[in-house]
Image (cartoon, rainbow, N blue to C red):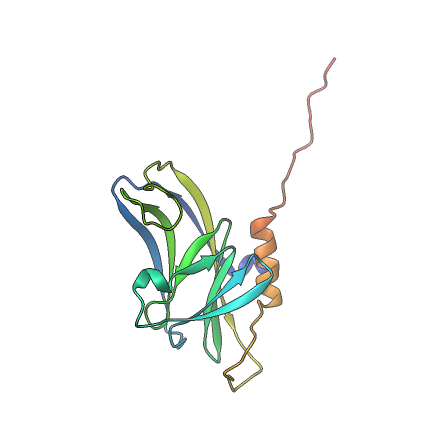
Length: 173
């Protein structure tokens, strides 16, 4: 067991490369009762709440995830932190889906003016954090959520890792 924030999370290192047309998604399934509600950050500043809408296609229920997404109930919160932006959804009760890569032969008419064909190996890192929640026993209709202090610590070590430079032992003439 590691003391401090380093003992509270699990890292998932990725190297994605799609060879066929389609989407690459990673789904995390939990027993959290989130009512298919997802929270994502807005460029690391504020948190936005997103509720799954049945009348929309799955693509319409994906939301930008610049650095984090989480689901929660009254007692627990499951957070996914990332080193790069992704799309995220909560299409099923207790789940978070993260869009890792996408390749399409045709234009989706949403501004690219072409398909997504040029696919290169893409490294990435996800950090998973499961926390107990305390405090409020009642969830109101108008709520504002914030990352926990632990989540901030874990996020900072992910986005700004400590670089270790060993001392130089060679003497130059």
